[in-house]
Structure formats: structure tokens, C-alpha cells
Image 1 (tube, rainbow, N blue to C red):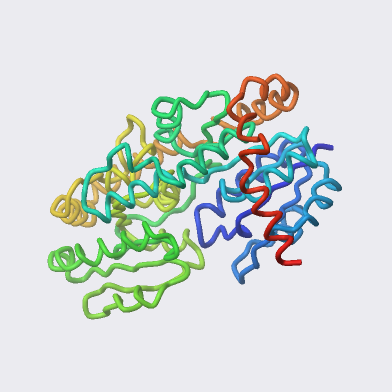
Image 2: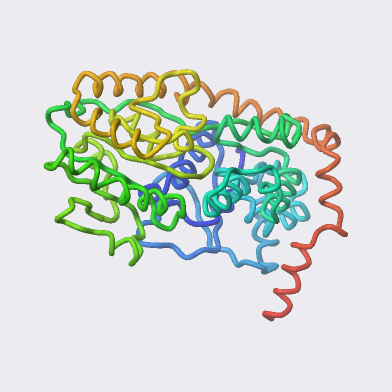
Length: 404
């Protein structure tokens, strides 16, 4: 039997975040190859945490900055360890290396945090991004984590290009694995059966909050042309400042958590997503394509999703264009139905699970069989494992000593 240990930043919440859905997809890929999986996490569970026991995944609460983890991971003795984001690798990677040196270490970035951070800085300073924005402390930490691992999963083709061409990371250390689609929704309501616009996104995620602020700015102009329409804004963990935007007279409705994205999307006519910055892939747009809901977004929102295929709606570059296209997509049945079909085509040609699962698992098995040779070529990783550079290790030991 093969064993995988996943060390999570949080317990997966697939109804709250795209990251939660992504984690369940990764679990499914490994289970299909007969891996026994144990999920470890130091965070507290919420009411919306997925019950991993339902899918035969063992779980255990672990302690941060505590040597008890050493005995836990030694007893599990996994073949593969998956770190959920670079911060988790910083905290536990050195312990895995010391106690299970032969385990394949895999980093799932979710998205490149340094890229999102750089774009956020440029956006908030109302200027174009420059190369120097990348070179932050987050960049240095994330890059170091990538080199310390045997394989890093990137969710976006743009991020793959950035990593290999701009920052010259050897392609053998990376693997492109986007969101995966297994099947299309059937019996989807028609154009005539739908009403209103929808927006969705976890409010704890700053780009989602900025998207809602953009929508508040645009909405009056859309509402003026479509007085019967409303905008339903869904998202987990609604903040007080978000609740203050709720205005029934304007038809700008802050709804909160969506119990079922499929139900919400099946009733709405158009998804609005004027995303100003971010990284990775946008789960809300991916799910909209799967569920037959056309969308209006920005170049940033659509980044790395449609390749050379037409978008399932419109990609806009300014406020006036966004408003015009939102009205057109909402009112024109032919344009709407064409957009829906384009979304299905993007999913079929770029995100079907069958396009990636075999290559991914072959990569994992090949690395396991040739791990020493693979690591010997990653000399930067070896340098970063050297004790003189292991600041996170000794910080953790200091914290543990202080706490005891």
C-alpha cells in the first residue's frame, strides 16, 4: 500500500473556497492510484469544514512548533508528503526531511502568493506592475520553498511561464495541474428561465473584496438600463464593511454564503467578475463554465483560462466596456447561448480530468523511483536545506522551547 500525508494550512472547505475544491481533487487523484491518505492540520475546524472521513481520508490534529509532529510523521512513514501552500512547507518541511528523508516532498502553491502580492501592491498604488514588485520577502520565501521541494504544482499556465522563463526554475521541479473537470451539469435552465446577475467569492480573500467594490461602482449604470435586474452577491465570511453595501432599493444584495453554487448559478443569467488583480485560476469562473453560466470579467480574471479559445461571455478592459457588455449578455439570447457553448468548449479542451491525471501520477511515480538522481540535480535545493540557512527550523525550535 502507498501512503500520502497531506499537511493542510486549513481543513478543506469546498463550499467556501476554490482551494477547498482543489484539495479534494488532489485527494481523488491519489486515491485512484490506491494511496492511503492521512490529512494533518493544526488549524481549528469550522462548521463548514468537509468531513474527510466520508471519502476514507484519515485525519489528525497536529501541533505547530512542536516536536510531537516528529513522532507522528515517523509513525506514518509516508511515500509522499503534500504541503498545502509554501507557509506549511516552511513550518513542517524540515521536520519531514529529517524524519522521513525518502518521502517525496510535493508543494501545492494554490496560486503563486508573491505574484498576487506584487499585483496587489501595484493595484493599490494605482500604477503598472514593475519587475521590482516581485522581489518581496514573500517571493524569497516562496521561491526557497519551491527549491526545497521535489515537485511544485502550479495551477496556471501563466505562472508556469513566469516560473520557468522569468525566474529560470528548472521545469523538472514543476508540474502544471489546473482545476479538473469530470462532467458537465445536465438539465440546465434556459435563458428565459433565468433572472438577475450574480457575483460570488469568499470575503476573506482580498481580491474578492476589491471585486465587490468594483461592482458597487459599476452597478448603478447597469441598473439604470435594466431596472428589473438585481445583483446577488454571494460569499462566505461576509465582513461588516461588506454588509454596509447592501441596498435593496438599488438591487445590490449582499446575500452571504451560497449553500449550493450549482443552485445559485442555475438561477442567475450572468456572472459579473470585474477582478482587478490576483493570481492562479479563478474558481468562480471555472465553475460558471462547467454549469453553463456566461460571465463578464477582466483580463486578470480570465488569465490562463481560455488559451486561444473564445471566452464564455466577454473579457473587458474598462468600466464602460464592462457595463455595455453586461447589458448585452443579459438581454441578447443568441449572444448568451453562444457564450454558454464557448464555456463548455473551454472546459472540454483545457480542463478535463483525463487530460492531466495520467501524466501527473506518472510524474509522481517516476520521481519516487528516481528520487536521489532528481535531488542531486537540484543543487539550489540542497543549499537551501543546509543548516546555516534553515532559519525556519531554528525559529520553530526556539518557539517550542519558549512555550515549554
